[in-house]
Image 1 (cartoon, rainbow over the protein chains, first blue to last red):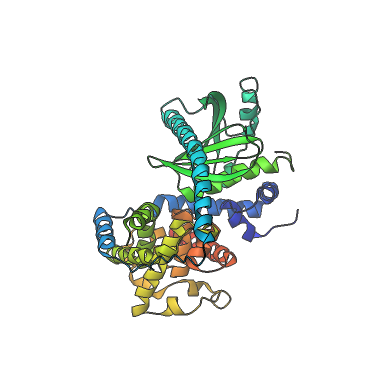
Image 2 (cartoon, rainbow over the protein chains, first blue to last red; image 1 turned 90 degrees about the vertical axis):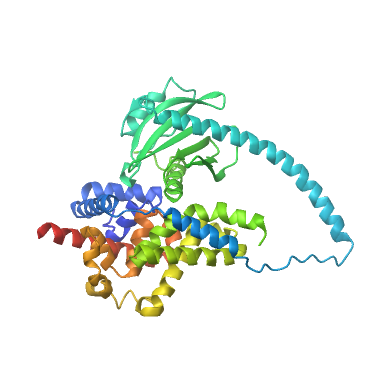
Length: 260
Length: 175
């Protein structure tokens, strides 16, 4: 490939390049000393910022001030207008309400099931944080983690290492979720830990990530045609979304280019 | 306002108060001003909250941070307008000296770390992209929403800001 120029290296290091482009760039980095030096400089800077430039916590007093100010502020709201120009509208409204009622009953059942599963996943995540529970197979390389699952699971989970993007694969383990044995992959991000749970999907369609919160931890859940994914971490939600995107891309890109 | 709307505001927006305060701290470079900015911004946010439904994938965090940013800039604008009203021209301001902000030089003694000092010396347009990316972990698209500039501009600012900070670190090593 041709020399990509430094301007693609920042987006690459920020996880903003598509997986295919990132792989091309990684290949280039392996043989271009100049680009590798540039990358190392950026990584050093990132470490220096993480060590020397703090994020702040809003002082409690500010929190109280804001809440108090919000309570007293009563902005004028646009009055709610309902026009009843013709007879069919109330009828249509009633009909659609009935549909909504039936739909939301179904939804609420599915929602409750999803919440129970989220509790399950969250409990597994917390367990994994206890000493010695994180990984059964240690690695920073997908080539040792993926084969380890052979014979331990009735499926071969897609395993990718995103070390080049700042999310190194730490290892894998078996876990038990939703009445079945599942693959759990542990990734690192600075001092944060990310758990990825996955197992073969029972429903077909691809669903965009949904987000839940459990005691300060973020949970992202999505399905691909092949797998159900849950991702849990105390990492910031934006970065967790970036990470989920990588996992998703890794999966869909696997059909196009073979994993290295 | 209806209590449900107030409750929605508290669950959707207030979790991002730390992020709001962090951005305000780095934009104002002062704890007291940062608190005022955040409080003002929250009141503004409440005012416009009825219109916020997260359309187009705008996260509540990016939405609040955009308001914090504008609040900080308009307060600064009372004393000085250079960073606020003039649209930053990437081609004209390409010299390294232009990235430096004169006021930052006076505040050097307040910052303890080299990097913190170097960050303070950056013009706010460059400082904010570093804070939003490195400290808040926002995506390029979110940063472009917060700063109100195209993603391409976010990329070039981020790249230039990083290079400036690296130079500052290297200078420190040499001295």
